[in-house]
Image 1: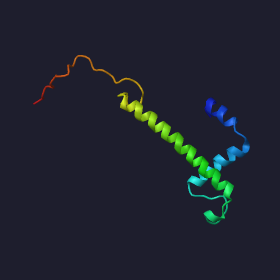
Image 2 (image 1 turned 45 degrees about the vertical axis):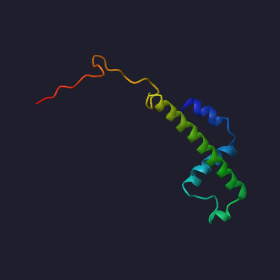
Image 3 (image 1 turned 90 degrees about the horizontal axis):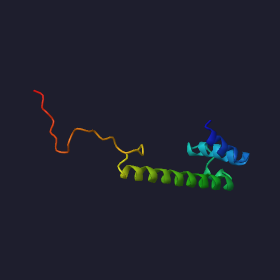
Image 4 (image 1 turned 30 degrees about the vertical axis):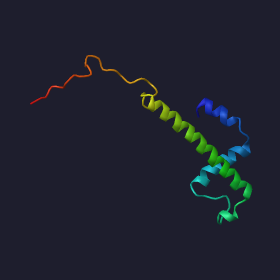
Length: 97
């Protein structure tokens, strides 16, 4: 595991980590208790909704960051585009016959 991620994960208590693991299953359609959505504990459903909202918020922030970088002309890498020297803006390519 990446050291920075390990530090972040170690900062959570066991209950929070259990909810995050549970959320991954919830996103795939698995519920805590057999039955339907009405059979689930209200606190668990609220926690899943909060986690879904937070993940969505973080995804939107990351998407917006990528969009800004792309709009600046740097593509997805964040680096300036490579220049090809020796070819002017009005240069024509030679046609091979």
